[in-house]
Image 1 (cartoon, rainbow, N blue to C red):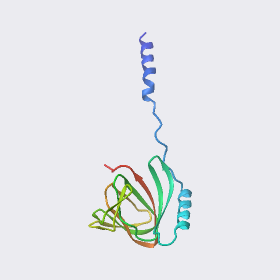
Image 2 (image 1 turned 45 degrees about the vertical axis):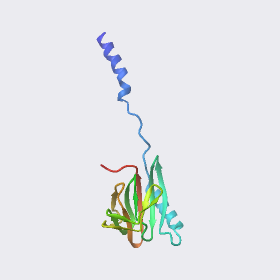
Image 3 (image 1 turned 30 degrees about the horizontal axis):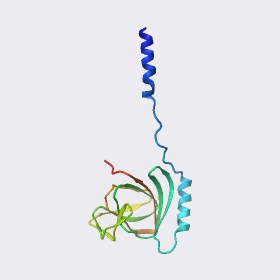
Image 4 (image 1 turned 135 degrees about the vertical axis):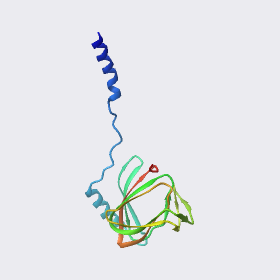
Length: 158
């Protein structure tokens, strides 16, 4: 009788131990990145210094390629952290400090400069994480282009 009770208890508890599937993985192959780079380079025209290609998306997480040929307006993402990995070229990346002439830009804030920020020299292979609410700015593009893969995450890292 005890054996039957123990077996019934195990059967009843088994669903609690079963793992529920999590969200789909966010994956991009090297070929996906190469294709996005080629599309961005082909679409990059005129005075537009930043061309964006979405590589993959899972829910609210876009993985995108950004192809820059010059400095872009500094910004603050109010509700998103941003992970940036450099795939080609380089730049001076200013992070922190104060956004000059802030103005709303959708869910973000744009400005004309950043004062008091820390400059980082980014090059191919480097990764930097910008917490939500922190001013950041791509300046001094080296080698004619600055290509990065960015992931915007609706959170601030702990």
